[in-house]
Amino acid sequence: MRNAMNIGEVIKAKRQQRNITQAELAARLNVTPQAVSRWEMGVSYPDITMLPLLSNALWVTTDELLGLWFPVKSSEDLSTLLNQSQADSIFDYIPLVKVEQSMRILVADDSDFMRMMLNDIFTHDGHTVLQAKNGRECIDVLRKETVDVCVLDINMPVMDGMEALKIIKEEWPEQKVVMLSALSQKFNVEKALQLGAAAFVVKPFQAECLLERIN
Image (cartoon, rainbow, N blue to C red; front, side, top):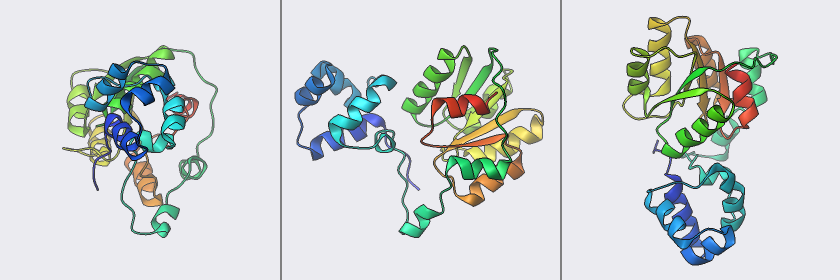
């Protein structure tokens, strides 16, 4: 399984496929051509509020922009992916009244843009965010810091989210962990439950859906 593409790489690839120049894309988005160039070189990232505009300008889905691609062998493989409602049913998830309190949240995801987007979502809701690029970094942070909840991707280099989840629940049994992944096959969701995750949020996700499950 290959790693998700950086959003800048996706923007460049889709722009070139559509024969759109950087200047033309910039004009459609009301930004400078230099901004588009910086995105494509990975120097900076578009603000999350730009995603709908980028999606329309490049004729792609938000999933593609975020690089949530992984190889499948057939349409049958795609059919094995669970939606949020199906994942919730495996966890017997019951919506709770949101508690208005600030939390320390550790986000582990190998995508720079995804970490930035999650940071924006959580800090906007009043939380403090710590970050890790893989499961091993997540464990290292937990050995130094106290956090209220960990949000783990599954497909990460060095140590994946499932292995990290297993270690976390062995060393810190009471630590709350929420899995956040596009790899929502039934066996992954069930494994996350068996290892002690509190919830499984399916990418692409709505911010409110994630915020409800870290509560």
